[in-house]
Length: 183
Image (tube, rainbow, N blue to C red; front, side):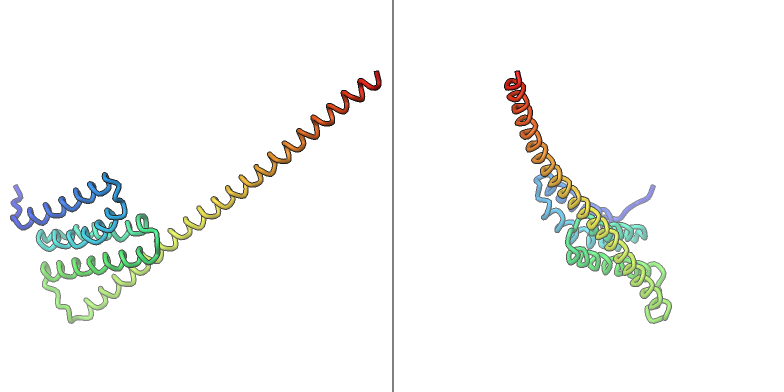
């Protein structure tokens, strides 16, 4: 069986407690506090678990947080801040872990090229998700506008129908009166 150090167990326990606290905030309907806590505390705790356990797959959880900022944060400013914050944590995790495991020389052009590639890839990632998010919002806005326009037209039609009904009733009454007069 795999033996984990107490440090690994403790780091995972702290991260688990953070998730439990976040769930409690959501249960109490403190959604804004849960969101702020989640984006400010969980990525560095993931970094802690990664550094202690030297688990290379943990950095993918920070990438998930970079995607979450597009779905849970509604202003471009907050999305950008959370994205950059998570991206910096991701880079620190990735390159620190790489240094710890493979003893990479950070002065080589290879590191610079790798860092540049990561930055460009994540800028494109952010831009693409931002465009998708704002296209969806624009589409939803146009649907809401069309729905509002249709509701207004329905009200106009109902008013016209009521007017026509009154005119029809009036004409029927006059027709009855004419029939009586003719008789």
